[in-house]
Image 1 (tube, rainbow, N blue to C red):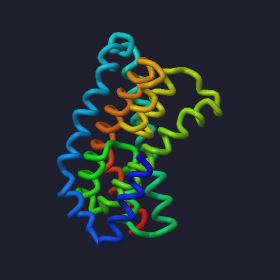
Image 2: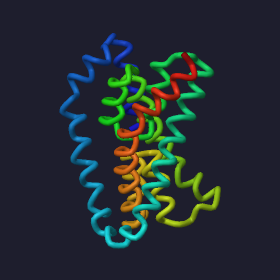
Image 3: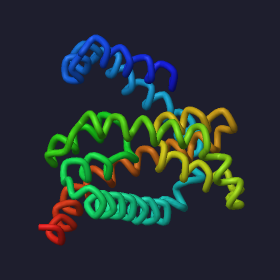
Length: 198
């Protein structure tokens, strides 16, 4: 996947292909993300009964984590670059691509930056996520699944799903809840944080 991305970047720059034209031309391929995410819901369905007793705690945890990631990313980007469009785009890196791009456009960000940041977050989580969690002694499959799903969305979930159905179920849950929570809280949260800079 990383090689494909690098080759696409090289070809796009070499042939001077605008991102909007590329996006319109590959909309069919992008639409395949939706059934892929739905397929990740099967392990979630299998573990639904065991999750019912924990759903409130998981929801609170993921809401706090989403708010923290959005806030810190936006603030650091504004402090370093002072570019609101870039800050918006980067602060939405930990959700699925369609939702991230829709929110970015709604908040006057740059959808190309958001798409790139989402892909990077997914790649880093898929490659280094489990190694990092083991390094900091997070050994529970539930906690590992929640962390990877929240931070690295579909790509991280697809990778961690190879470990066990429990990993897949909790990662899928985190992916879905994080996307929903971010879609709800991000617009008002970013607007409130923005008041401190203008």
